[in-house]
Image 1 (cartoon, helix red, strand yellow):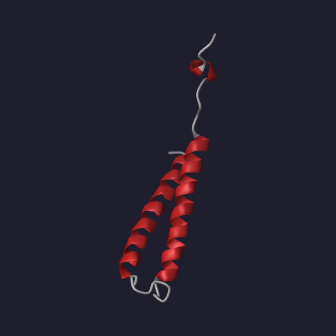
Image 2 (cartoon, rainbow, N blue to C red):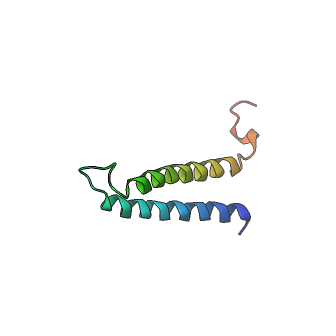
Length: 77
């Protein structure tokens, strides 16, 4: 397994763990008064972390993919 594969797998596992943590914290929020809830700041930080990790995983996968031979995709000789 090369370094790129380990990086993508690690980021994906971190993304899943942060989603699980977000779900657990979301259930503890006070729906009547969100800003005064003591878990509200963690909720905001986890949303930012989830967004960052999702973007990083997508960008790394797209930029590391091999486009292949350009001659295979041309429709003219």
